[in-house]
Length: 449
Image 1 (cartoon, rainbow, N blue to C red):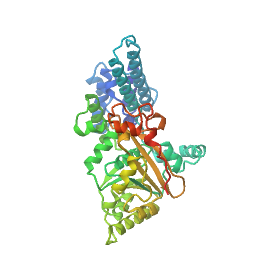
Image 2: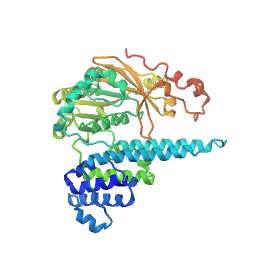
Image 3: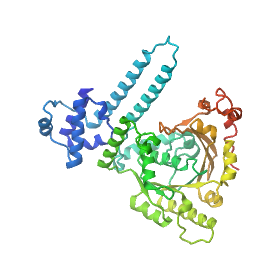
Image 4: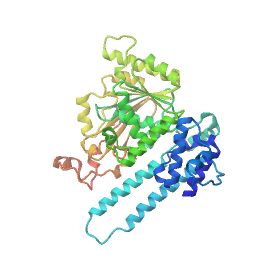
């Protein structure tokens, strides 16, 4: 692996124009050999200070043992190969530990410890492989021909893909000129769901705007950082990250500061629909989120809150049509009625918000998140597409793990009630561990009326 590292360094020094390609990959210098890691960090720091990479002569003077080698491949090639090698080494080491376990011992504590190690190793490998490169719109015209052909094969994916297959199948992807409503109870996770979606859109090359009415910019930054660098949110919030996580966090932030991506997320304040329109044009946004749409100013000065919300959603629908973007708004459900339904695993549907008439009329898609005590214990979130302008309703489940920051779609058969649940009534209501969530979820999927 040392040869690969040396080749990458030499290529950066001899072809300085390719250094930006290195910035697109989160190469963890902690996984490199000590001497090549030091030189790589020196090059990054030099670029940060002077806006260019040092010469080979400079590096040789400071690090006399530096070896000059031929490097015929582009920097990007070496970055990808290093990611593969790092992942392979991590996987090999954990497999070796597993095979050396004492299988005849009746001490099951070491088994649990090993499972934790395997989970952490898989998480680290995902982080290593998770780096993506910027998308240059003008240079991907040929790729978009392939994308079109791919959409034909995928049977109807017309818009922007989301991270959840069921949502893609139901909607065909989020499309231009769509207004999407995301509804749920207070503190149930609406903003998190929205940020997971918009972080995914950003990774796919979209320029995203977040208009935050309910949270400060600092709170949004923390949440986005935890998603971007796959850091446990509570530990990040309390500043109790492990040394390795802290190094990864600082390295990622420094590189983010040095290499400003064309496609990114812009966090903006609230205001009015006119303000949102101006920011869409200013930042050339592809999509936007309005977190807490009910707090926007009504420029028509309505006398009632219902009329105010009607005006806001109607005006936002006009905005997405005019700007050819798609927008998402978050709305809060009526608490008393919704909680009773959510406790049974059922959505409230199209008329669950105080402003149901306006939001359902102007929205192309309405998604409701559903959670109950059992689901929270099992780190699972239920999601329902309770209505869309042209298509079916449906439901799906995602992981809801803020330690691993992992939110994949999961099958009902994979959901098992954790043994940590001690409440007898809960066990009677939701079944044993063997029965999993079957009882708790049997009514989920009821179509909106």
